[in-house]
Image (cartoon, rainbow, N blue to C red; front, side):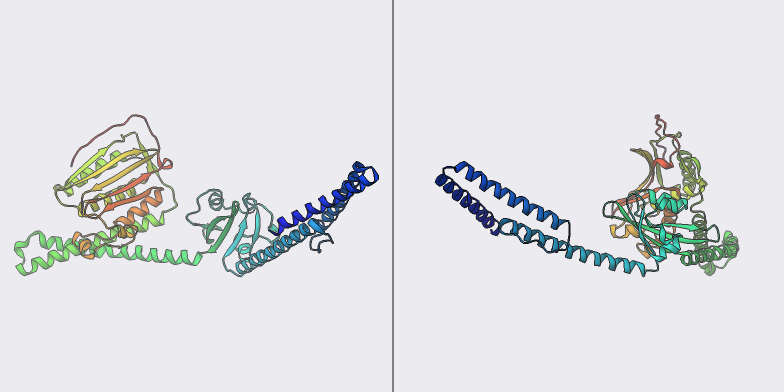
Length: 442
């Protein structure tokens, strides 16, 4: 409202000036000349005001020059905008300084990199962990760091998972890097020394592996003697038969647990070491079917092979066999005896998918995120009754991770479950156009 009044006041003054000039011109007989002189004076005055505004804008921080009318109002508004802008920049700079001081005091390394990979800022911890120098600011991070794992991680778009890598060879340190995007493509890097954590985890894994290995021999002896005693029950007193059978059952269960622990330890120790060869999943599934036909002759297990033998994937045969057999055995354990378990090997878009379907008791959705944890059981009574070790799905998860495979779980309580292993294009060897289909039932 105030701006409208200013413009109306300026227009009224110009109109008054022209009216006076016209009246004087009529009086002296030169109305056109009088109006021209009045307009020229007005233009000269405005040009002078514009010159003052330009000089003032070139000297920020100074108060505006003296002006009247519309020009005084404009200069006042510009000055207020400049003042608010300076205050906002001061607040923003204070926030940036506070954040930089906070990052500078962190033990973790922090660095800010722009969309071109140029270092904009980093703290002292980043200098120590990444081997940077104070004068490296403004340099390309790609030229300063030579670790291949870090460079591959930095150049990719997916930062959903942190990177853990080793620096300095076998006796070097371990670092974990997390990257977050912000602003117009800038990246915030957090670097942490996790050597102590990695070594502690290695000690734990070695302890579990060593204890499991040492317990195998006595358990094998115990199982052998118990099996020998129970091979001819006519020589045993009746009161000893049931306790011996329970002892053998628990000893076998413990032996299976140790086997799973040793397999997990081997998979974890070899994670990151690529020893994959082309594997025909059809042959693997056929071998698994023969084994299940012997061990579970009373169960109906169907193979649905939409992909033929020419479709190969890269992997470790023994690890993939263990992962698939664990999925199938879970389906057998947690579904009725007369229900069907189906193994499907098919192509979905660019992916190969192995699905194990059952029509069993299903799993509540709240349990699904934790199913692959070691020893996690939905119901202790159910797990103990089936003789499971609680490590089957943990093995599947680790095998999938070491092969670059995605594990998907879909289940509905009371209607069954579908466990899927999704092989992406990077795990495939060939993809011929012909397809074979087989449906043998075990």
